[in-house]
Amino acid sequence: MKLPRTTLILILLALGLGGFVYFYEIRGAIVREETKEQKQKIFSFAADDVQSLTVKTKKLTLNLERSTESSNPKWLIKSPISGPANDAIVSYLMDLLVKGNSDSTLSTPAKRLEEFALDQPQATINITLKNRQSHQLILGKSNFNGRFLYAQADPAAKPDGNINVLLVSTDFANAVNRELSEWKQPVDNSQKLPPLTIPKPTPTNSK
Image (cartoon, rainbow, N blue to C red; front, side):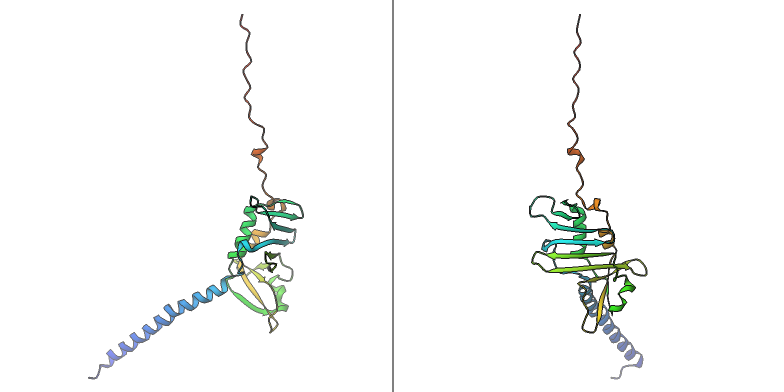
């Protein structure tokens, strides 16, 4: 039995559409998700793995170290002053380092660092783990639309002489560009207030 020409064309179109749906929507989604996962992670360590942090900006170089005591604060400022750190501020930075994503990666010649302001970065974060391994994140300028920052993670030249430049969240800039007073543990003024006393009424002499 010979199929009509129109029916044959419709069958071929249906087969073609089915193939497109499979390869683009199903198979393509799997590949895109795998690629996304590969691009997203900046570092692979956990928050509890970190022993110390050094945050260097254009105004401040701050050394932080995890407290050996189990009680608060979890972090201590070692320099330029000594004292307890603001755990909320440090935790915000740690969360970005541990969970931070790279939107994309650009392979570029090392001589182009200045185009991304990575030769004179706005901030450098050095991370030392409990196992003595070290990592580094260098933050450059914003990209053309201001949505991301150019950055380098554990910078090293590849065999072809190029380097990898990442696009990371601008939250990193907010996390590190702070005054020293913000890194310090807030003072609980309520503990310094004198106890409230109610004056006793003065007895009156009755005649």
